[in-house]
Image 1 (cartoon, protein in one colour):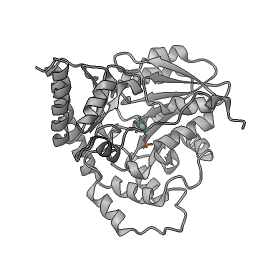
Image 2 (cartoon, helix red, strand yellow):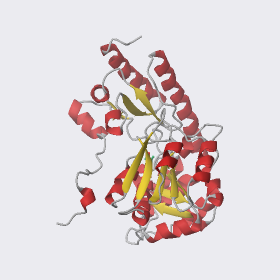
Image 3 (tube, protein in one colour):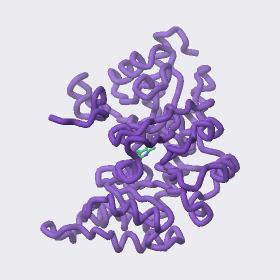
Image 4 (cartoon, protein in one colour):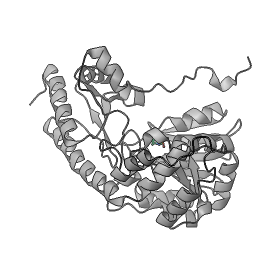
Length: 366
Ligand SMILES: *Cc1c(COP(=O)(O)O)cnc(C)c1O
């Protein structure tokens, strides 16, 4: 068959091990997954109730315009309905962006390591991917600017960056946007927006008025706890949104996803509480790192990239044997580190105990 050349040498996304798999594989009863940055507190109570009441007509296609969710989201963000695009997770919006803007003869710029889907879909479309190494976990925006040329179509900024958790400093972002040519779409992926506690953070949604080439991505998968239902969204200027909308499939968000996201939006208390507890638990990770002389990146998200005393693969395996699923840095472009989702207090207690065993094995337990 006549596959696109770009697919040669590429591989599908390999998900981490599931809880069930690990239970079976290691004969464990309790397994904790701290690998995919899901919300350890689940969803807001009203969202679960909503699913129980089930007012969905199974045989009817979803509202392709996502009218109700769109209306509520517009009000919440203080934008117009035509500033919004909804996707089957922000993953799908990344695909739509690549499809609408990238192809042979174009290039795109992203950090490394960062969320791999940007480069993945750009490559499939036949675009060249320019990767700019992080500096101490943060985007090297000067490096990005140097990489810009007349064929650059999309720039991907991930803030907080997955896997380091570093936030792009607002002044640096503004300076960057002032220098980037207006015909390049600048995507700011804020999948972990709800967790940001940095006082210097300025809401990026306000930037779309001033910079017509900015598109902000957010999701219901992380803090809102709705990963299973696949709802993400983008905020940008109407012309940008309209072009992306043309490349979107008509019923891309399911009826269940729409209803539940709408409900989830109503509960700010749940999100605020998750944010607060996440920060408290993050401090415990920092303290643990300091106590054991392990480097941790400065995360504004609900995960942390932490140094391990042995190889990342070995560390991941040894934690797995003890029932803790984390992501090896080897798979993320961060050898010598693991990415751990910040869990509940009890989950983290267990994680630190399991990590103690690692340290002990390496003769580094203090
Ligand atoms: C999890 C994640 C996403 C994807 O989220 P979905 O909305 O579930 O597709 C996008 N970007 C980053 C940086 C993420 O970590």
